[in-house]
Amino acid sequence: MSTPARSIGVAVIGAGMAGRAHLAGYRAASTLTGGAYGETPPAVRLVAVADAHEPFATAAAARYGYQRAETSWQAVAQAGDVDAVSVAVANPLHREVVEGLLAAGKHVLCEKPLAPSVADAEAMVAAAAARPDLVAAVGLTFRRSPAICAVREQVTGGRLGAVRHFNGRYWCDYAVDPAAPMSWRYEGGPGSGALADVGSHLVDLGEFFCGPVGSVRGTVFSTVTTSRPRPLGAVVGHAAAAVGERFEDVGNEDLATFTATFAGGATGTFSVSRVAHGLPNGLGFEVFCENGAAAFDLDRTGEFTTTGATAPGAADTYRRVLVGPEHPYVAGGLPMDFPGVGHGQNDFFTFQCRAFLDEVAGGPGTPIGALPVVPPLSHGLHNLRVLDAITRAAGTGVETVPLD
Image (cartoon, rainbow, N blue to C red; front, side):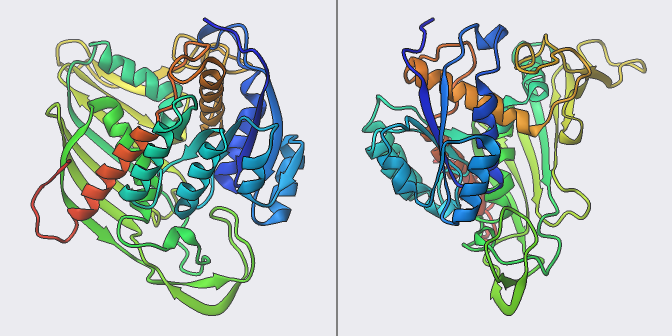
């Protein structure tokens, strides 16, 4: 295990909802010690926050203790005191920003989905391949959930046996109000709405348990609100904002359902929505296996349920497991790292930021600690190819769409 030679200067491009999660994650990353985190965390300098809307950048820099605010990604790319950058801006901007940062010699962690199209993602992967000395990764934070990883250990460790069926849902309500303002999230064609926004996470979790998707079929898209009012000012995340009288057409789906067959033989059933009334962040799944099953609900991040590993019978029912230090990411990852102490989705970003920094410190593919590396841009490209196949399976009359 190597030791970082110098401190890492970090910056975040985008001061909206996801950007703030990255800003807080880097701030806390060096406090994680012990267990898989090791005893020598990378030294971190909180350098810059960039956002095209200057008040957002200034407020975020002050709130999270970063040295300065910028109004362009180019300023970050040109900064000599910045080594590693998170990109958390609108999806259509990802390619230009990531390619520019890599050309400037910066390590990059890009939010999902990686790009607005497979072609853009392919170009980004090519740009990363041209700089093998740099870490170029995609952020899929649910891979850092202690409970989700604990369930995965039940599967990969053989206790539950081979997966037969993954059933997943990600239901949100941020678009349930038809008067909510128009934003980039509602622009783009089919597949760029709820599927790209939250479905990218759900597809990745399906593959986290079942391996690569082999084919998809039966996609149904639905758009409930077909036009939205334009905002009168800048909008952060899913927040409400003052709107005018002018409306714009919504170009993508509010909800999607589809099925998949994984290369290993398991079946996947998926449902995603941004108009699920009363569910602000409703991620959940069940994994049904040869010898048992397990389930997770994001509303109860500190636990999972499981059954099986015994002969089926009346007494073989689901039991609750509280996440504790014997499960991934908890020991050394939380100030109070014992069972029953709560944690949440924001902590997943901290764990992810730490894994990214460990790899930056040790070099691509050779992190200084024992945390799994953040998936490379090529993984984000694969994720987009699955989303593209799901989109092509919608309303085309094609019964099954194989993955290339």
